[in-house]
Image 1 (cartoon, rainbow, N blue to C red):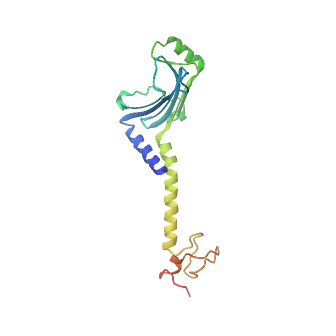
Image 2: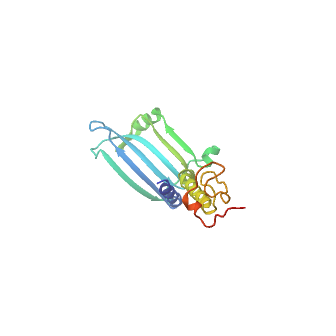
Image 3: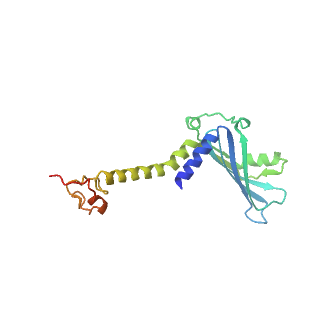
Length: 191
């Protein structure tokens, strides 16, 4: 599973230099509520991010919606400047306060009006997610390679001790050797 997530992250990372993809989920907590919540996961220009919002919608909609959007990367302009070294390597966090949201609500005349609860955006470089999700499959491959080398090289599967002199039992850790290694014709007692 982690390998599939790692592969998807790498694909989004590379694709992000040509297209910006976003998956948005909108939901209404209850039928009587006038507020809608919005969560967007997006990727583009080498970053992956999460944007959360709360809206008031003036018309009736389905209480649960998914939306997929994809834009040409040339049409999406990132105009924010990186002021700290953390932002320069791709990390970004933006939180709007209740006062800023209240001012936007007073100035807004559109269908979607933000409420005075604020919203947040968090971004991180895609390479970070690829490294995190890729670490588990990489570790597993290293473990499998080490186990295969121990079986092939007549080493104890537990501690790696050389079993050519004692093919039936490991003198280091005391474990009984599996029958595959004990019957291996390459294992010869050293005299």
